[in-house]
Length: 330
Ligand code: SF4
Image (cartoon, rainbow, N blue to C red; front, top):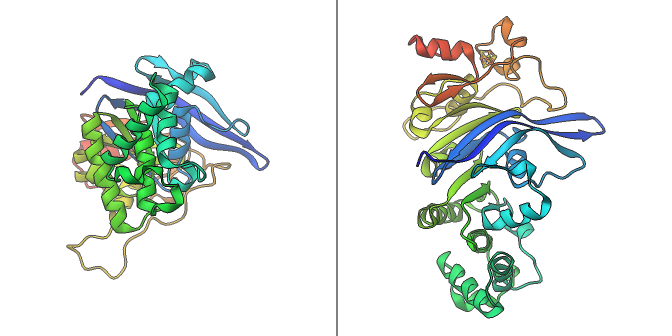
């Protein structure tokens, strides 16, 4: 389990726009073990999707550019691969599920053909074999084989997302990246789709990166959690450690803003202010204008990740020190 599958080192991705350089991802470091699932949590604009697109080498260029870093997947740096090598890796080794199934599916092609197309792209099988496998995949995600010749518009939102999952898993990828896979679905369907993803992750023994802003979903599915803020990972730990004692003030603010069924409160606490403009990030710790523990030096120091307890890292020297000394974190 501890065999590292993905190791991202100092990844920096910028978008060059008319209003200036968007610092979407800055010096990001991250590791994912084989068979592990990592929850990637943060507000809109934190850089989660950009990181995922970076791993897939799908950053639109221009305006986007991977400025520096390494993305080591199975011991090889994806940033040194040619476009044709990446085409083989996408789908076969790393697959991605996007938020809105309608943007991932071809509206004028029946779903069996869409799954079969992916299979034939990566596997040496005949057209009829690929169609048979497509039917198997549909059954695996809970869609009856009789519906394999239907078009996407004949399915509900939840069923469409099941088709997308079938396409993603059709070539048995080693890494599955799911970008807010249930955001476009209503709540009961969300639960079904998440349950399905959990089952399939076990069945296919794939590693998974689940991008979400929902800490509840992460608690249900993931082994490890990375919290992102303004293009950087600001806390990283295994789920139990992070949920029992979050260290970074931003992570603690996120937890406080989640409603609890045990507490009767009139108003939930919120983190004051907004995610900073990525074109004009604040100096020093980008969280300092919103941080209830900020001191003057936070405006000048770029906090690095420090280990608070084994395997639990946070980018706030003040809080890590307090945590290690057993002092209360406000
Ligand atoms: Fe807050 Fe300072 Fe820690 Fe940043 S470094 S999270 S501003 S206390």
